[in-house]
Length: 367
Ligand code: NZQ
Ligand code: ZN
Image (cartoon, rainbow, N blue to C red):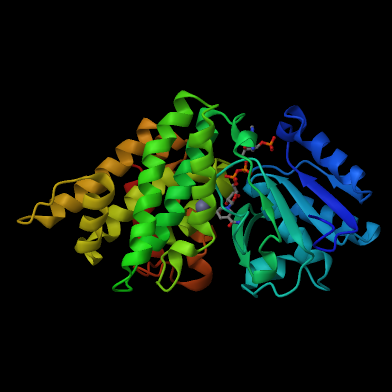
């Protein structure tokens, strides 16, 4: 596959120990050797990937004339690979793409061997990096970031802990919800795709937690992770993404898992914006969470849906408050200041939020 997409000198990029321990890295190395494709390696990507290693990777690619990057790991490894891919062929600082929102129009080709179903970076045109100078997260996007191919073998995810599996499921559900809560009318096809994927997660998450080797459940989650974020569920509809923006500062500052941060933020964001479109929240409650419609008091139906979502997240071991996550109320001003809302003044397509709204949502998470 690497050859088919023109790779002659490959950078194999990976994270901490998991791909060595599982033997996956050796399998990738053997496959490249068998095809007589030369390669260099750069490991050590941390979860919530950092700018420092990206600079190192860019230098290595230039020195070694790398023309293809193979990311072996999860969203962090893939995002780091994408950042290196852009930086290696850009005259300026790769961070320009992340800080200025310039669309990424040129990058080395990237492909992935995915080991965790979560971020959806294996099918997305996005990358999220934490800048080490200040520990804040920003994203960059562009079609040249979309992987040329991604290998999704559910067996590779059987070594994930119950906690990491649950973080992954939470992120997948969040990617769907960011698209589900829309102001675009008459989007029944994508609504139903979203609802089907959410229901699949509700069914499969407890099964992989009970049995990490449940191949069928792992396979359904892995496939859903791709469908949740390659934008098939988002075609033709407005999207929100405020919860992601609000969460990113939690995982940047506390180095928690992105999915765990979303478990805290997303239900609180829902409570905060619910009155903007009660009917949509009632649809979420009745179709996804099987809540009976209270026609006299639709607000009760909407609230019950959010309550069941939150209870589900707790049941799979996710934190749902600042305290459970280890976040501190006194850091809220810093979180607001570091968040994207301070770059753009507004965040979110369903309900545009300003910095005061973002602060209130962080405070709701402390109750
Ligand atoms: O570093 P190793 O040793 O590989 O361990 C990883 C890491 O500690 C471990 N892991 C991965 N696969 C494993 C495994 N452990 C055992 N067995 C396996 N098969 O899991 C830990 C988490 O890995 P990470 O790559 O950080 O997880 P995830 O895929 O959730 O990625 C999170 C990052 O993606 C970004 C997040 O902000 C965060 O930085 N996102 C990227 C997006 C995108 N590019 O489209 C969208 C997302 O919304 C998200 O923001
Ligand atoms: Zn996410």
